[in-house]
Every structure is written in C-alpha cells, then in structure tokens.
Amino acid sequence: MKKNSKKRGISPVIATTLLIAIVVIIALIIFVWFRGIIGDYGEKFGKNIELVCEEVLLGASYSDGMLYVTNDGNVPIFKLNLKIESPGGYETSELNEVVPDWPEVGLRQGGIYSGDISSAVGAQDEIIIMPVLIGTSDKGDKKTYACGEQYGYVIA
Image 1 (cartoon, rainbow, N blue to C red):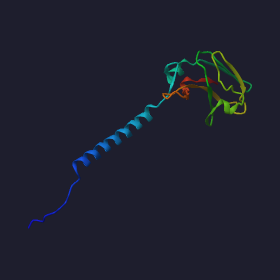
Image 2: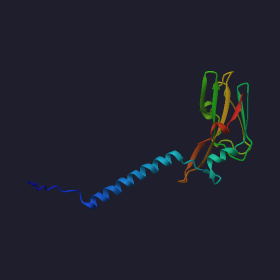
Image 3: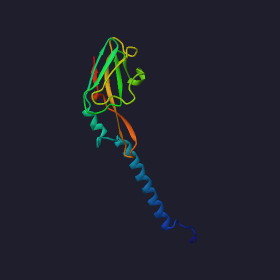
Image 4: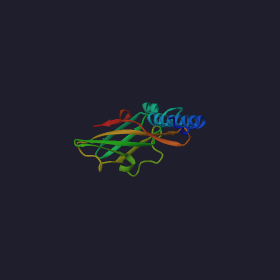
C-alpha cells in the first residue's frame, strides 16, 4: 500500500535566494566585527594618528602644586590626560577637568602651560601626562585620539 502524499518542497529559486541572503548577512557581521577590532583612528599630517604620537615631545615639571608643561615638538597637542598614581591605586582624568584655564586650542608647537593641580595630587603621587591629539577621520570630520601611556611624560 503506497500512500500518495502531496508534500511540496521549497522552490529552488527561493532556496537559492535564502542561501545568498544568509551568506551576505554573515559577511556583513564579520565585516563589522573586524572593523571594530581594527578601529578607525584617523589621520594627522597624512599619517595614522597613532604613529604621530611617537613624534610628540613634551617637557613637564611639578613644583609646589604647579604643573608646568611645554610642547617641545612639532605636533600640536589638543588636550592632556593625567594619570595620577597613588599608593592605593590610580586615577585618570583630562587636565581641563582638573584646571579650568587649559587653552581651548591646546598647546601649539613651542607652547607653554602652567596650572595649579594641587587639589588632585597628593605628596606621594606619581603623575603621568599623556597627550591627546586631534586628527581627521575617514569621513573628513575631526576626531580626538588619546595617545597611550607609553607616549606619556612621567613626573615623580
């Protein structure tokens, strides 16, 4: 006894379309994931802004609550990040949050800045000053990039 079943499968055209859509969606997910890993750092002077951090030359000193910073290089510095390491841990903040008189244009080549940061620094603390640069993204708009601690200036 054979049963005559009238089951119908999915048409080959629809099956092919679904397979192509699934492959495209997976490819987009992989593209977005890789883009997040690689990142869009932007450019400054026609180079990757991360490489420009190596060219930053800072001079700094700290005395009686006053921080003195000079830009001795050819790279303009937009902002400075402070990492204050104390015996119990560390705290990172932007210098313009600690002192209200940080220049809006930052430190140009040869620029000098001094400000009172005694409210944020203790006697046993070590200060690391890290530059923040501004460059252009792939879309042409301005983008800030905080250079890492390896490009910072340590004040004991």
